[in-house]
Image (cartoon, rainbow, N blue to C red; front, top):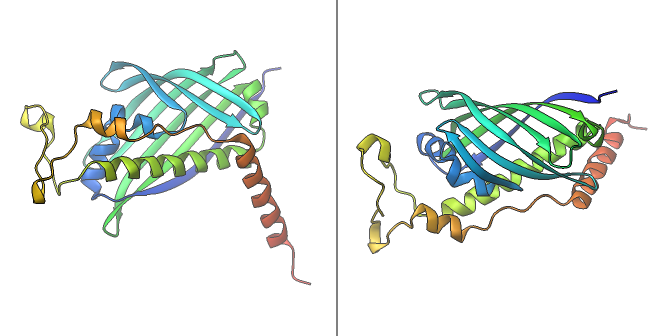
Length: 224
């Protein structure tokens, strides 16, 4: 019998940039890929399709998926996009397919990114992730670590108020001078200065899930 599991969940994180600028940063996949824990780009098929690997832990089990991710829809005006990804475990223990929709909206002086995920798992990996709470906890921690790494990347590269894209001007991006004579680092230099996010520890994640379950249990009990 083939084990299958489907689920949906929502996450969000903040970016300390105006919405239009945050959108351009998030759509630069090759630039931000190192910020995602356990992720590595291995190839680019076309402007909307990428190949890569993702390493993740479900409890004590370490998994590594290889596959593709494709932008099925991009709306620059609404700052929304939908990505469909599929991958198989490198040890043949099953696969995972997901459709992720994200939207960038204003939040104070910066932006908030809303992420909705539809995930389907099959094979042994579906058994490893039997608890929906476990998968949601993994997703939450992935998003949190991604946001932290993205913040570090942004901090490492001075940001002007508004910059025209290279595609719009038809010329390669050049270092931009800032007040005080500072010059922005090249994207390659910025990526080199920000360490790639590491896969989440299965033990620490399991402890977080157990603690959350205990808190919910006591919170649901009526007062004596």
